[in-house]
Length: 260
Length: 348
Image (cartoon, rainbow over all chains, first blue to last red; front, side, top):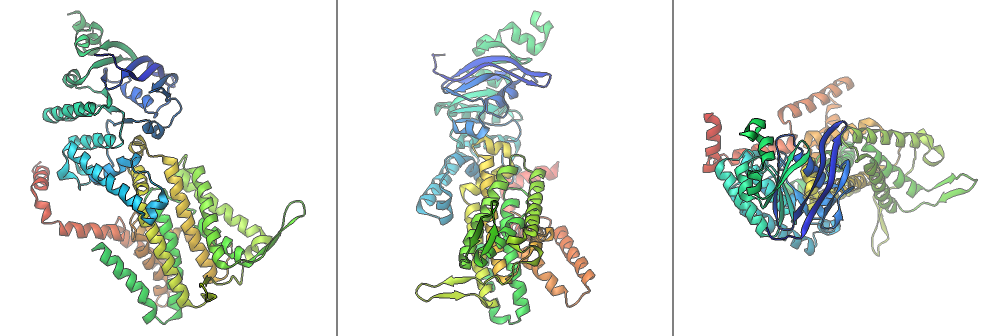
């Protein structure tokens, strides 16, 4: 890949829960506009890494920097304000609200107006509200859920909820998006559509860090792949390099396969 | 449809004094109305952020005492022998100060307890109410303790160029409570439908996700607590100037429970829920009194509450609204998308 300006730097990050080492020593960078995937067997520390980058967990050692701002000690909502937005493996929607209202909640960062203006219904507040509603409709259209816009998000299928989750993340206007296993539980055609969405997101100039188990999908979409195993990085490179890396093959398939 | 119901309800409430001449019933309506305002403020926390304030009466009582003391004046000793003397101010200023001071208390209680939330918030609010009650009971120099503050003046509205109008009669106070109630209702409605209200809903439904899209938990919840406490303070002030006597019993736990019952039965998270639940449980004791022995009254009260929650578990307003929507969308539910899905479920 062409040389990117560095968007995010992870330096010697370690996370320990009591005696359990979730991440022992992790360093890598993500360039602006890049699609980087973080892969590894179950329990390798991928989601923990995500939680560190988005402020849900404070690392035991090391630091994460996004666009020259150190993230250590920042709260999740403050990190969101830097434009670093994530999706979740499971909890991806506000279940009792309609899809449309979900997106309006997601547009929180765009809709901050003075409370008094909202209470008095001043023109500025109304204009802001109109803009938000338009934006919410656009996002629903973008993920193709127009027909479900007024259904409770909790009543949608799993795949559809994932789409809502991504639209929600995009509503927060990220400059970098962290997707945690976005296609798990999706069928082949849903996954295919999702890959298109990811490319579209990148086309908007948004950097993407992806955690995913679906290898064909990861190989198709990534510029670069970082492989974690037992809390440390065992390989890093283009999809082609990773496919042929003996350490990766061993981690995924065991010793025998590595030698064969 | 919804707007039509609201207009009809307001019109009905506005015409009540025209046909209801019984002062005893009008009095019951006024005190019920004051408690409904308190319940609406509780609903802002309980129904829209999911935080149960079991000491909500503290804000109500603080509003009552602040307003009463502002309009009565006081003369207390300070450490070091100095004295703090306050000459009486108009009750309307007391109302404004009640809102301000109660809101400030809401801010500190919120700031302290929203770092932990849930059960801890419940405990902090209960403790807060109890502490405030003990202060009111023991600071005799300021509050007269159990002897109560008496002769609290009625609220007087300044009329530009016509002096002022003192609201002494029940009729006047009925309309005062109705107007303040409507203002509180509109304020909460606007709030809930703003970006701030959506942030509250987001936090209640899925806090992790809400935080990840940039919603500040502490700020949102604290702001909700401030506004909720301020409205409760306004209700307390109305109470003090209407009843014209208050003692530390105003902080009794049962008063909070009454508000919670009003909110839960009417429907938490519904704007009109506290009003509906409040009218039922505020007036039920009045209706039962002539026909039952005291002990039977309370059993009946509990029975009605249980019956409502059994038949309409989400509260009267949300449960009925849901049934109405279902009945009306009966035909729409046969649209292709829904049909395909229910078909799958039934087939499975």
